[in-house]
Image 1: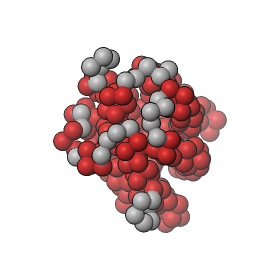
Image 2 (image 1 turned 135 degrees about the vertical axis):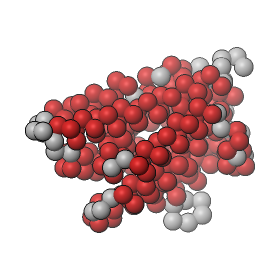
Image 3 (image 1 turned 180 degrees about the vertical axis):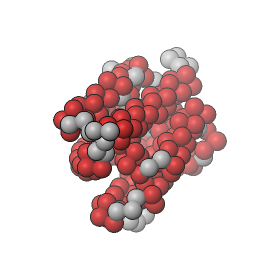
Length: 230
């Protein structure tokens, strides 16, 4: 099938921003300063399950990708999250966020406290990366196109409304302000390069739509588990 022109393809990918979880009611209330301490803690706790699975997702992409030059760059994402030493990387930064909101490392690592809907959504994302063509998993990561604006808004909200949180714990968000645009640029370059036919491009857009569903479903599950006033 003939390819859609690149500009039209990229617009179709970017249009998925309308389905991004920045518009979820729970996220909107977070940015308005309307969440309780327990709700913030519940979000941090459950989101950690996603954070610690990101390197597994990226390792799956590496294992499926036949292109050495792609693997050389993509592996940086694993190092960004796992770090190269103790106390480094995004996972360690999220653990510090957990401590800043009053959770222990033991609580964060204990999967028994994860809301079932969050576990299901995250596991589905990792399975997608393991079982689908590598370029579709790369396309699914393109939610990073939309992440910087949300990250900046979330950081500002935490600093303004949730002053009980130790600012040291917000380092993860600050780091992602630079990392997410870099990663998104690389992923978009790969997707436009390797998705040439109309069918390949449609599957790339569907993969990104699926990832938006994953993130939205996570917030649905968290919102139900930690209702207002509970």
